[in-house]
Length: 233
Image (tube, rainbow, N blue to C red; front, side, top):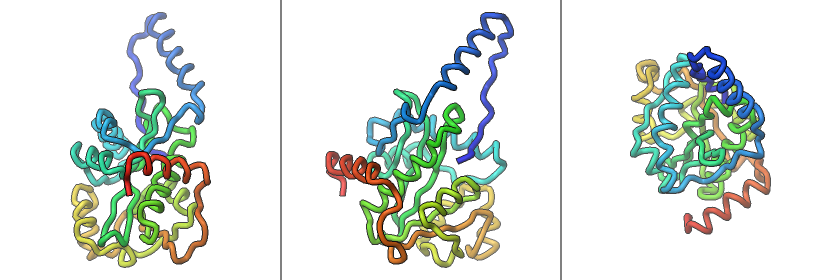
């Protein structure tokens, strides 16, 4: 996901400052996708919540698009409920996304996909997307999975998994879901159009129209192992 954020540049132009920046740049350029661990977030990961929210907020500013604001408590709860996926490089935050059920668990959304700017270009977004999708499939196998997005990269990942673009009337009619859009700067457009469409594109994955799973067996086993160990149904 191309949520690019400006990297803060050190204003120290002394040789020592330049050397420091070059060493940081070199270290980051040597990071490989294998160095990034993707996990189903747990309560102990709440320490990353504020960084996650700041990264999402800055990315939205950079793109000039709307975003449904989430609170610290909301994201922390998703972690405690086993409804979030986190990407870590050692103990450093690299990426995040979460899932939620709607309409008496007939629908599931995958939302808030973000990759920290220091770790973009490694393919982390796709790995996170595969994990959130698999998490949703394992926990609610009969639910339709949908996504609202204005990002080309997310649309591409959704399409690769088998999502198709749909009008909003094919998504959940759960008012609690649409209430979450009130924090977006484009909410007035959504309301003016009677919740039929907005700046975002609605994309849907219907289990009745697919056979087999689009994600790898490795990812499925990893997520399933975590759910079993934590006693999450």
